[in-house]
Amino acid sequence: MNRQAVFNRVRGAEDEFRVARIAVAALKDQLSRNPSALRQNGLSPASVADCLDNLEATYIVRLFAEFEAALRTYWRQVRGRSYRPRIHVRDLIDKVAGRHNAPSTWLDYAHQVRECRNKIVHEQPVGPALTLTACRSYLCTFLSLLPPT
Amino acid sequence: MASRSLTAEQTRTRLDEWTGNVTKLLAQVRKWCQQEDWEVTQQEKQVTEELLGTYKVPVLRVRAPGGFLYVEPVARYVIGAEGRIDITSSLTMNRMLLVRQDGRWTLKTDSGVNWPEQWNRNAFVKLAGLLTQTT
Image 1: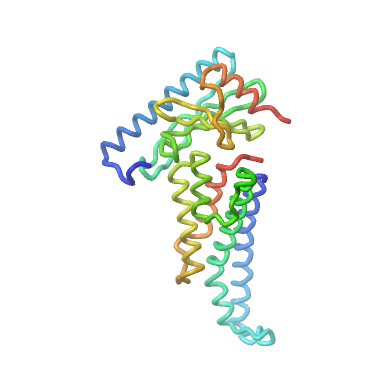
Image 2: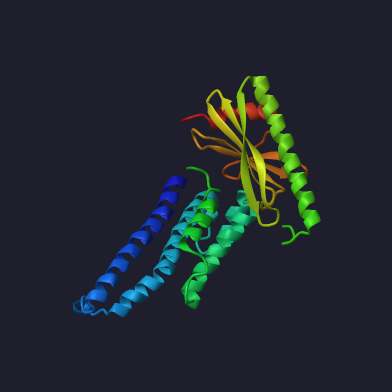
């Protein structure tokens, strides 16, 4: 596992979000002038508004998935044959933090993002508790615990 | 793990203790560098910890024969120890951890494995060579 590649994937997800937000906002603007533009696709302007409203939350879930995949890959390398694939991500975060003497603040931040992701997935809040930029920053800080290769 | 909140006095005491330990360790590293005739410059960084707030600590930049090394305090409140300082090669990004346990500094590899040698001048000089080594 290459730490820089993991950073790039996480940052790439944030960049994709920014592109998507610009694109959907442009589409929304276009629909305000031509509300029937998406009719042939079976979509309404309301679908586009919903997409824009939920975009950040969607990408937070994606960002966390990249983070979790990186931690699982790393932990599999560390544990070898004793790796349990079904280890809960909360415990995985704690184990990586313990192995690398993570600052408590970094661990708290990673769990804040995990809880934010859980709320999005399970509770469907109106908006995420953290911004995508904050999530990216917290997760990359935690990932800096991992060795470079 | 410490209690999730400290009184103002406890915070000041812990912070003074931590920055004192950091200052002593960096002074020791600086002395060893002088003995090796390695140039050292001191910078400053800001650290934010939930229990201590935001404070400044010194960071050393060492010109070792193989390349620059940074000796950089990370945090007082870390999991499983009472403070962590990283020694990182800016060339290779290889890193060793100095963690404070039971009132003394011990070395760990970046993979979390305890280093068999004690923290002393010989270990530091040896690590400076290993960390800056490109394979």
